[in-house]
Image (cartoon, rainbow, N blue to C red):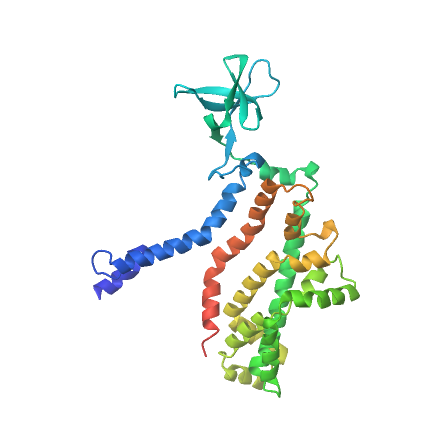
Length: 358
């Protein structure tokens, strides 16, 4: 009993199969979990670090793990600062020199203290002198007026689409789930199967008919043209229906005996009792709508109605790609979704687990 009470306090890394020291299966399990953490979080950490690198640092090969910048020095007789290099001498020693220019595999170097003589050396004998440098300009330049990047407008469009679509999605899916779980009518199961069968249809197949309907409604280049086609999701209907099946029918019958309308039963009884499942559907909707790219790309062509995801695509020009801005804006775009998932993940796990209880 005492060991059972102490077990929860040991935490994840205190759990082991052996009673004393670690068993070999414990080492295999923790190594497997560590590998999973590296595979999942490694690209995210690399993205975050790379967003603080300069354009020159990003183009280096092999890539550097941290953001570095070349150390430069003012040299007499030269208008611009010259980059410093450690140059290996014939006797094996190294000397600090400044690079004037580079032509192929040959570099022209000068001694910063005696810049009168230009020395030609092989680039294989040079090592750049670099310092840790964080390129904050990758983020600050996004808000500079001369960049012509209206981040505030793009963020407002993304937030409006996400919130409006989530609210409507929760209401419509909950109403459909209520009808499929608490009403008995011919074809109820067939309707549920028809709704779930749409999960097997790729979104790209529906893209053309959806665009035709949006165009006929006059919603091209309108935020509602992105919101309305996405408000009914079969996943949300299924999750909410499974949860509503756990709500006792006696509560609904008692409310009807008290002359409560069907809308009042839905609003005052079903929705409050379905809060865990509704939270899961809302979180999923927020993540899906915030990251949506394909439908906004087709429906929205005017820059003033771009979302953040479409704004990311604008950094890829015909002849040049501004990777430093692309990475920094990717971090800014992904941060809200990460925060939503981190702080609300317990609602996701508990809500999904409860949908299978009958």
